Length: 252
Image 1 (cartoon, rainbow, N blue to C red):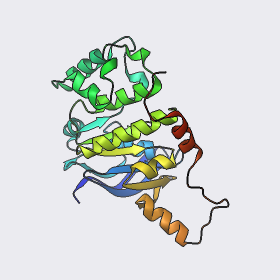
Image 2: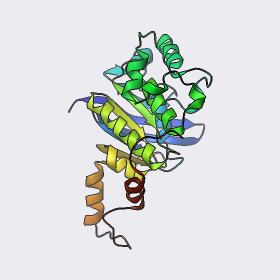
Image 3: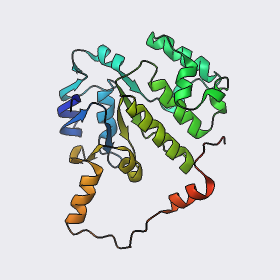
């Protein structure tokens, strides 16, 4: 496997507080890589450093063969970063927003082609503020693809979404990966990480405490003698909800 991101001995201090404590990991080309951890674990800081949005204290970060210290502007050209909802002008249509971001990236864009990827062609002339939560999240992912990036960073992309919207977003993320884009994702939903990620790094108190595939982590836990206090059923309540209400996307 080709390494597309290499992080070595990454440190980030805020005064005397050590947010990231010398972590090292690699991300392989074409995988969905999860960076997980409780609030305050250092994962968002790590993500923002890789996105060139925050300075590191020490360590070495290579992205697509580019050195973060020497080539941050070149790195920006090959990555896509999901904006939070506050990053959009609410009164502009989706087509107008894509054209605006295309100008910022100095890229020729085909708004309808991007909207087709995220199943929003029928909303092309709607204003951003008129979108449902799930539609806004799908649109935010579309904007990460404007500069045809090799890597996209998604920070908790399904937070606050209903079960249908969550699962449809999972399918979208898988489709983007199938087209050759490497995906880095953070989430607080462990079922989401298990479904989507090829490998995950779990952080706590500024350190990586485990890094492997979800299956391997689960097998290791079971082999250690761990047992759930309650027998696991073949389905869960979310499966019931989806089965009864359907998986189709809906307007809110």
